[in-house]
Image 1 (spheres, rainbow, N blue to C red):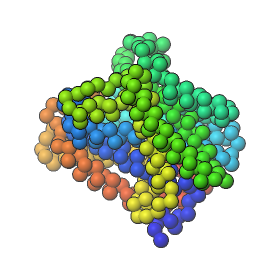
Image 2: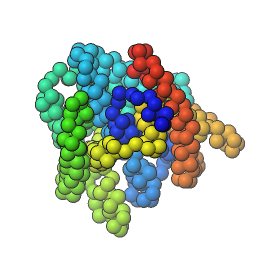
Image 3: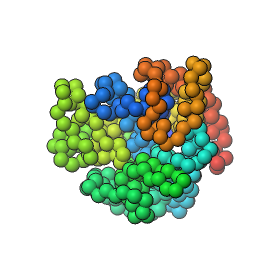
Image 4: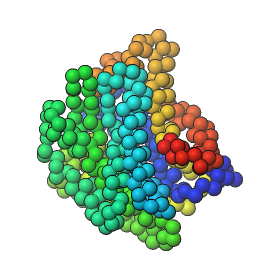
Length: 393
């Protein structure tokens, strides 16, 4: 019997396996940030290569699946709890995530205590989305479903509305829909994850949680997963193929078929377009279907990360950043570039970076390094369920 089997945690294994998979893939993107030349945009079809493009594309699955499953987990957490209690938990946890984004994660990303640059990323998106969900969960399920679908499918209608400057209305728009960089007197803020579509994703994840509720017929769940998976992928192919709506950047014919295919897949993440959400969540539904009855060493490996994703997320950024600094010291190079400001992450450091295969080697090493730590922490959480504060870590 494996370590994870002995824990007998009352959780949905397939959901934790999927969460573990995407958090590991997320680490690949972050290793690339610190070890590959940042100025080489993986999605720039003029300069990228297929392997570099797909190194970035595969990580597109992380944020939408993570936010979606946050909604699903909220539903499962609240099954036997009053809505008032669930709402309080979601709002408090959301505030906590936003706080960590602008404090701990700011230090870990930049290795700076100046706090003069804030990049509002995935923890910000999940946190604000949780707060919104906490305020909305008292609504009937059908209303929540309608709101979620409108936000996900309809937010691209707003793409033509753009603002500039640092006026309050413009900042509100950056928070809601338009990613932008704002320079205040002594503080810079990058609104990278506009929240409107992410709120829609977490709401749909919450509604989706009903498929895993107690007593729900597994055969019906399998049918729904198949419908949602095939339906989402089909919708992506149709909407993207028509090339009129669903993404800020239409695809176009390129120098050959391979790069035309890359253009077709080159969907917008900031904010996540309808096409982006369909092409990422569609395969996730099919993965949940295919993995539900699978139990082996590999699924146990993924399960370990999937049950302590926040622990892994916070610490892996620090370790990757520290490792990049150590490599510079060992090579006798200027390690001061790892104490970053906004200009470094925007355009990279001239002459800095390693071949792409180094990214993959470091990524595998980071994942293997964290496995025993995550396993130990998973066991600790399982043995101390009475400690309320663990639900925030």
